[in-house]
Image (tube, rainbow, N blue to C red; front, side, top):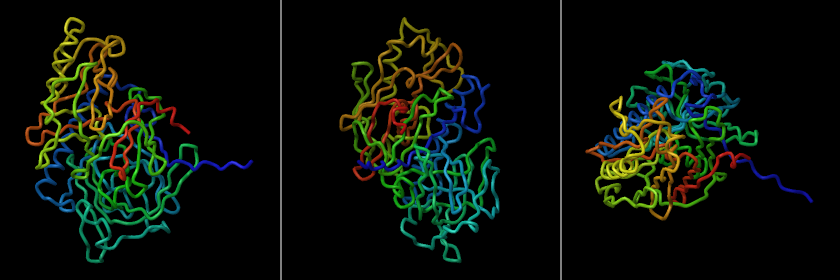
Length: 428
C-alpha cells in the first residue's frame, strides 16, 4: 500500500542569545554578566515599545511613524536565504515590527556582517515595487521616489536605521526534517543605507512578524505562526523553533487576540500565586479608550513588565511567601527589583507557581525558573518588573514567562494558543 509523504512544515531553528550557536556566544560570560545584559535589554526593549506606541498615538498614521521597536542583546536569530540563487542571511525575529529587511548591494552605507551581502542585480526573482502597492500605508517611513519606486526608512530608538527600496523576492527556509521550502513573491525591504550603533550586534537584518497586514511575514506566509521556547539558560539546547504558515502548531487553550499599533495584545484578567487569586483591580491590565494600558505579548523582551496596579500585589505576595524562608538582599542595580540570597534551582523547590489568567480560560504558568533569574552565584531576583509607565500603563509579557510553552498566533481566528510542552517533542 502506497503511503503519502506528509508535507514538510516550514519550521526553522531559533537561536537565542545564550545559545552556543549564536555568533556572540561567550563561554566565559558570567551569570551576573548575562543577567545584566538581559535586564538592560528588557528595559531598552520596553522603552522602544512605549516610544513607538506614543508616536503612533500622536501621529495617528503608520506610514508617518518611522520609529520601530527593536531588541538588541536577547532576541532570537534565524537563518534564511534570499534571492535566486539564494544568499544566506542571519536575521533577528521581531514581533514588534512588521517588515523583513536585509542589507543590499550597492551599499551607500552598510555595516559589517558575517555572511554575504545580498546583491539584487544577481537575483532573477528580484522585483522593485512601484508606489502605492497594496499595504504601502503600513510601511514605516514610506515614500515614493522620483522613479515611481516605493521606499522605506526605519529608525530604531537606539539609533540603528535602515533605508532602501521595497521589493518582491523569494525566500528559502530549511525545514525541521532537513529539507528546504521556497516561498516566492514576498514583500521585503532592500536596505542600501543601514547604520547600527553597536557593532557587536550580530544580525544582518530583521524578520518582522508584527501585526501589520500585507508586509509582515506573519500574513505573507499564511496567517499563522507558532514558536516553542525551552530553557534559554542552557547553551546546548537546540529545540527552540519557529513554525510559519499552515504547519504552525495551533494547539492548547486559547485567548482572544487583539491588534493595536501593529502589536499583539491579550486580555490578562488576573494573577494567582499557587491557589490564591490576587485581588487585582480588573481594570489594571485593560486598555483604555485612548490606547493606554493593555497587555502586549512579545518575543524580543526577556523579562516581563506589569502595570503597577498588578505588580505591587504580586510583589507583596511573593515577599510574604519568602518571609522567614529566604534572605532578602539589597539590589545592586537600579532596576533589579526583588532579590534574595540563594540559588533558584536549589532554594525555590516547592515554591507555588504564578499563573497568568487570560480571557477565554487560557493560563500561562510560571514555575520558579520562569519567575526568577539567577543574578550571581548566590543571588537571584524576580524577573517581573513594574512598568512604572504613568503615561501608558503598558504591560509586556516577555520570553522568560513563555519558557516551556508553544505559543501560536492564528490571525484568522484572532486567537493566541498556549500549550505547555517540551519543545523537543515537536521536532519532526
